[in-house]
Length: 118
Image 1: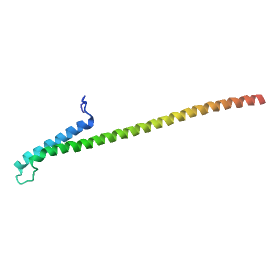
Image 2 (image 1 turned 30 degrees about the vertical axis):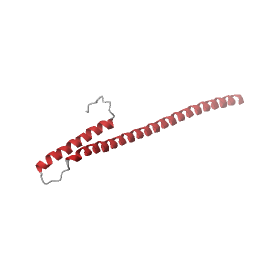
Image 3 (image 1 turned 135 degrees about the vertical axis):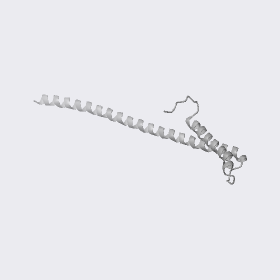
Image 4 (image 1 turned 90 degrees about the vertical axis):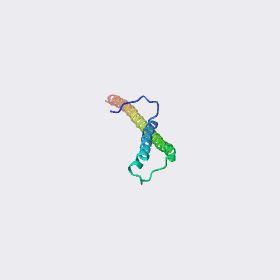
């Protein structure tokens, strides 16, 4: 079971930092270890690493932010739909209670009318 952290960072930002940091570490390891293992491989130049790091954080951050916003919007729509359904159920119950009360009054009126006519 995952441990709950009392972080003040939003979930999308924590996820971005975790994922992008892992990608950056793997990218640097690839560039360090790759030439030792396979010298003729094609590896990216070291001067591009800072740009790659910034772009990784920006791309993953934008994606996670967008997903978080979409989830929040979806949840608002679901909540609104549930509120509307609950409102309709309450309205139906009120109408049913009102109709039942009116039916009871009609029955009493009819009974009184029948007892008078006998």
